[in-house]
Image 1 (spheres, one colour):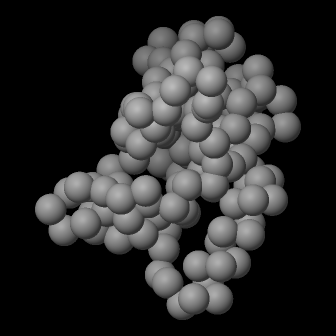
Image 2: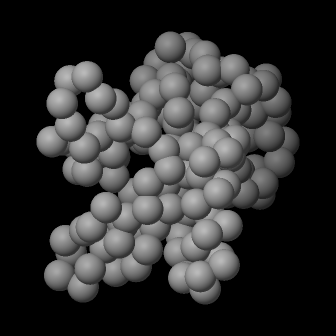
Length: 142
């Protein structure tokens, strides 16, 4: 995959802006390979940052998802939570407009647990799906 990125950078520079930001960062200014562990750390840091869209008023469904292989940062998170699918169906049936945010089921983002589940006892853990309503003043209801 890294070889392909080098080839794209060298022979098809017009295609580079079409690549996702994460892939563009894989090849630094000198074209050096970025180790998988470092790419995983970068990915986890990106996922731990709260999504910008959650600052806008509205209803958000935080949908559980997984990668096909957790140690491969190049694979996207795919929707796979049956409970989240049921929550999405209920929102659609009730004609409630919402936006979907994918959450990694094996490594929940830091913002997810801190923002809505800080009051949970140690014996409980935060889980998906989560339907969150962000109000006009920036506060949220779970």
